[in-house]
Image (cartoon, rainbow, N blue to C red):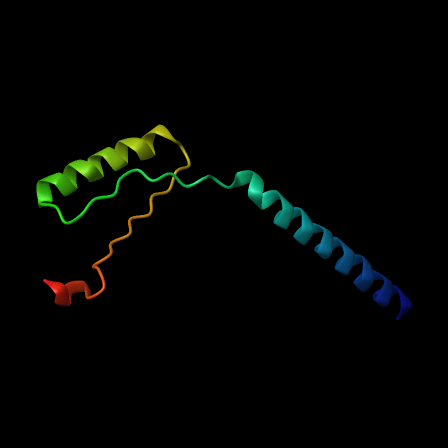
Length: 80
């Protein structure tokens, strides 16, 4: 019984150490967000050219991720 309790304490310490290591190493891998483009309501051709530009920016950086936020205003689709 004592051996089992001793092993549980060791496992708790190991797991706690691993959690601390992961938590404190996460900021090392974080990227600073960069705003690529921002625009009002546009036509389809302009939208496609802007998406092409976004794609070219993503290709430049190997581990990049894009976030596209579409905001319809205070009323959204009802404002049209």
